[in-house]
Image (tube, rainbow, N blue to C red):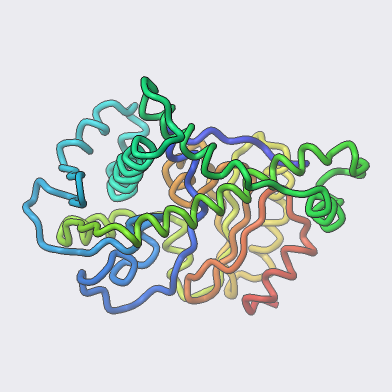
Length: 307
């Protein structure tokens, strides 16, 4: 299968599910939930967190957990110079990862799936392995994917790629199950975040090529990839032709994930290339992993009104 593996910063980032962006609302009052006030800012369990006034130092409070600004500062200090520049614009993303990891540790430690003596990362891994061990992809499911994506496997027989397809689809299926679990965990937990701090972070986080494009009022196609990745390089001529064909109807954005690591993580990119399609309201309607033939791209664009 034509795709490249991508390492994303930190264990928890590897578990992030891709971002489903809600419709962008014009009236952002800074009250209610994070998702209601600032659509697309939260990527997981903080979507339903309540925005409340707090002391400047306190960023998040929930049962048995409090996260302070100083904790994020410490994380910043431990990052390399290039990553610190990205982190300054994505501190809410960092807060969400800190909260998610802490809550997963609590869930893991309280379960029967984790042996004593494990590190926090090992405890989370053991807990999630046990929780999603029954999520598998059958051979008929793999065969259906193969039949629909023969161009991706360059003419190889199903038996040659069956194991690889099943592994990839199983990983995707488990990520989707994990995403649902995170949504439930966040929704079932009373989480409060600093309203004033989040408002400031929203302005910073949205200052990137993806959010600027999807919030422009035009349909958008975003390619997450990297130079030197063979299927990514194969996509570039297609992107160039789309820019020339639809200069006023469509935003075509390329994000180099090697140079925008946190942006890739925030949008749930674990393999490249990935093509993400947004309608004119900024809502994600479809994404595809791997090389995507121009004919298939055009079908997706037609669905969001670009013909």
